[in-house]
Image 1: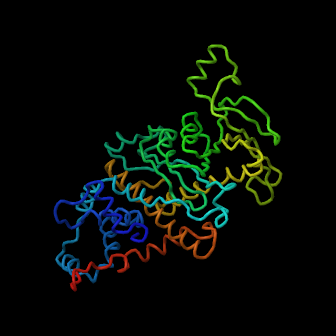
Image 2: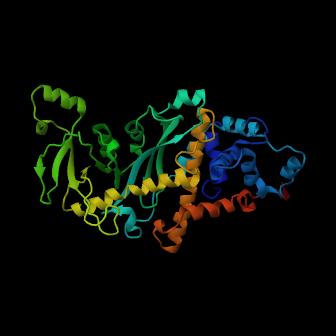
Image 3: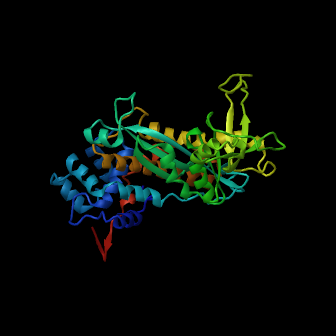
Length: 402
């Protein structure tokens, strides 16, 4: 964790958010930030046991040993208060600070690019939180659920599965609304892939404004008039602004005459083989994609099924968070208060990002696709070394080691 989130970086973010403790405390702000991440690393352990594992590498530290011998280990209540003093924003800021883009180009990492464009995927998921009055009021409870849920929308590179943007909010805030906060993180040379829930005129306009491209699956009720058929059988259409479309239709305009954002429409099905889940010869449902990559010669149609399939890399990443870190999609988070829920979610994503950084560094060193490396084994290895002395090296003052 100190490799992915150096103490200097943690201190800087804490200072930016003015979350530094105002007097000497048993759990200072920096340690509270690492403790929040350790709670995610050791999700099934009690607060006290997480503290022990985090600081066991500090046995050489005289002051820590004296406090332990005197029975001054912080209680669960003290650790909770330290987390409350820290708040969710610094942990979110720590995560944001390490969301660096893939440095290797298409030649060095071809699996991460589509015709020279860096591929990103966007998706959302929810997590159960304790049923307390505050959590129910702030996050909301699904109609078919017993627990309040926090919604998370994430943007990630498909090649590295490294997070590039995260939004955390209540159930009442839709995925499209939350995604709108992430689109400014895109840029020229990017292409983002998403499922049906992310296609809208406003969202597509925001993506195009950054210079990036989009490949988004289309809902059945989206109006896509055929404006021009291309040589490969795909066609040019447009995504219209819903309010303008309704207004112009009332004036008698046909769908093809209503202006909008130009897109290329691609339809395909998948035929299963003996190794495919569909089974040999079985045909999938119809996939309909709308993309701003309108040049059929520069972006041949046969590459789009594989590109859309790449969004499952983010599904796998979500599985890593839900199952390999948290223990399962039905598991309930620890935190009883909304701010601590948000902080816990960001801490969980910090650990995910740190494990991914370790995997990607190992893959780069070995010249491998990161998909060849196991998330579970990397997380287990990181957990074994969490409290190594090297992680919290002593601070020197002259010749005195404290």
